[in-house]
Amino acid sequence: MRRILHIDMDAFFAAVEQMRHPELVGKPVIIGGAGDPTMRGVVSTASYEARKYGIHSAMPLQRAYRLCPEAIFLPVDYDEYMRVSEKIKDILRSFTPLIENVGIDEAFLDITDIDMEPEKIANKIKERIKKEVGLTCSIGIGPNKLIAKIASDMKKPDGLTIISEEDIKVAIWPLSVRKLWGVGPKTEKRLKGMGIHTIGDLATVPLESLIEEFGKSYGNYLYESSRGVDESPLITYWEPKSISRETTFQRDTDKWTVIAKNLAELTKDVVETMKESGYKGKTVTIKIRFKDFETHTRAKTLDDFSDSLETIRKAAFEALRRLGLKKKVRLIGVRVSNLAKVEH
DNA sequence: TCTGGGGTCCTATAGCCT
DNA sequence: TCTGAGGCTATAGGACCC
Image 1 (cartoon, helix red, strand yellow):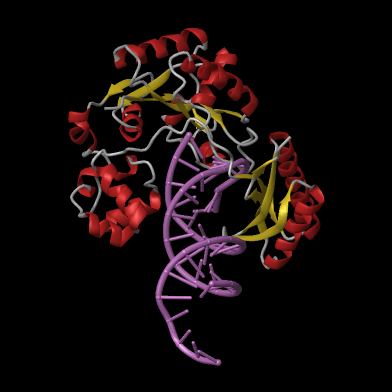
Image 2 (cartoon, rainbow, N blue to C red):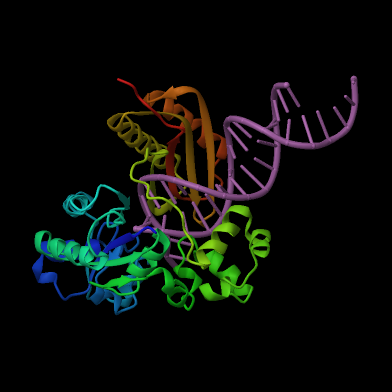
């Protein structure tokens, strides 16, 4: 049986800011967008003090401001969080190379073959991160990724939860289906409509019904995960599948010059990233979100892999022309996919 | 009223080929 | 020659994750 550990940093962005600005400790701190709650943007991370006001990730900054005007709003400083994240990953790597990174502040470790009690490993990790980085984290341990992740979420902040094979059903069946990875607001609503609220409710539904309702792939996934079954391996290395940039205008616009200028700049950014990381791409997709949030994409596939700004910009503008602009535009974006590594 | 940015994966559909 | 059935690829949209 595998032993998987999931580590989740507590209010990571806010905690990093409180560490380098100690006067913010104990105060409601909200990290998001440009750090200006009158501008468009959403909350990336709220400190625990801010969460007491009902503020949470993905909430519009303007709403967060209304809920807690005295909060301290700060811009996202991704470079700094990346630096701290790397220090933490170094500590994790000293325990095992079998690590799957999940974004900047989470990771899975396969600790099956480490000759030490899982609880002891977890406590050592927590101690070292506290001492060497100055931050707290929450850790979950289980027989697979699904259970480890649910476990890490059960006690926060600075928690440690271990779910053994025998305890899986008792531990997860009372929980909302939302706790399952891959079940978001839409699926939760559909399940509610079927009278399914908890993971235990989901586990009573026959496999055939789930496949009929949700398709083969997702139906199977729901069936297995409701029973705590998850054979998925840790992904320790992967190649990017696409590189993209997008931007939301501060005010919706129908000015062609503004839209074109932004698309050109975003394309330049994407191509720069492609060159830095050594990829060429074949498919160029543009994305437009109108003021009513209706979102459309148009794609153009090139004859050859390219990292030429000229070629990719032309493809982007051709796709934009095909889409047409009949309403005010809220967001514009560009993505290059179908990537191939440049050999040297 | 609000609803970011950078990603992944899945599904449906349409066109083309055998 | 006509009519499909499948397979493959490109495209568009959508749900979800951090």
